[in-house]
Length: 361
Image (tube, rainbow, N blue to C red):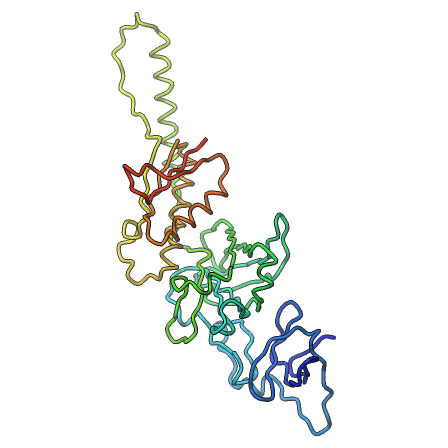
C-alpha cells in the first residue's frame, strides 16, 4: 500500500488517527494526529481510512499558506502549520563558500533515539551536481542525486538512528559548474558518518541566528580554503634539481685529477613542518564557527599533503595542538586514505604532545 499526502490513516496497534502530511524515505511517512501532534511511522504499521462524503481532504497547498521563496530551499513544506516545517538554513548562514550537511533531531529531548533530518546545503557560488549514497563496506546504496544551484539546499530525508547503524556512513560526490564562463574545479568526494554520540557532544552543535533548534552542521567542502598549485614553479624547481644532479655527476666522474673548482649545490629540503593552528592560517578568524575552522584546517592539511607528494618530501610534521583532540582525530582518519605513508606522534621534545609526523615510504 502506497500512501499519499492527505490520506487519512489509523495506527494498527493504537487508537490513533491522523493525516499523512509528509512522505519520507524508506517507506516511512509523517502523520499529524487529530490532537495536533506529529509522529513518524512505517507504512506497514498504518491502515488507510476511507473518507465519507462529508469529509474534505484539505490540499497541501491550501494548508501551507504562502509558498516558499523560489531558489531558497528545495525542502518540502509541511501542510500543517503546527507540524515540523523548518525554515531554510541558507538565510542563517554567512556567505562562506562552503557545502554543508545539516542534521537536526526531530525531538531534542531524546537525542539517542530521535529520528534525524538530513539536509544538503550548497552555500557556495558554484552550482553542483551531487550524488549521495550509503556506504556498506566496499558497496554503495544510492540515496539521492540531483542538481543544487548556488545558495540553495535540498532536504535529503529522515533517518532513524537504528537505520544509521546498518551502514558505514554517507559518501557524497560533487561536480562544480556555472552557466556562464567559469574556472573549472576538480570533482570532490566526502565521506561522513553519524553516531549517537554526535548528538550529545555539545561542542559539535551549532545554533544559527533566527533558529531555535540545535543543528549538527558538517562542512563537506570549502571553496576558498584551497590553494592552487603553481605547476610552472614546480616544473622550474624540478628542472633546476635535474641540472644540479647532472653537474654533480659530471664533476665526480672526472676523478681526483680534475682541477675544476668545486661547485656549490643547493640541496632541497626533504622535511617540512606545518602549523595548523587557525591563527597561523587566517588573520581574522573571530567570525568563524568551530565547524568552519575544522574544515579550513583539514583543507589546508590536504593541500600540504599534496604539495609534499609533488615535492617528494621524506617527511612532513603537522602541528595541530592538543585541545579536545577533534582536529587530531580528523587528521588521523584522513591519513588512513593515503597509500605509502607511515604516521606517528611527532617528537614530544620538539613539538610537545600536539603534533603528528608523516613519513613517505
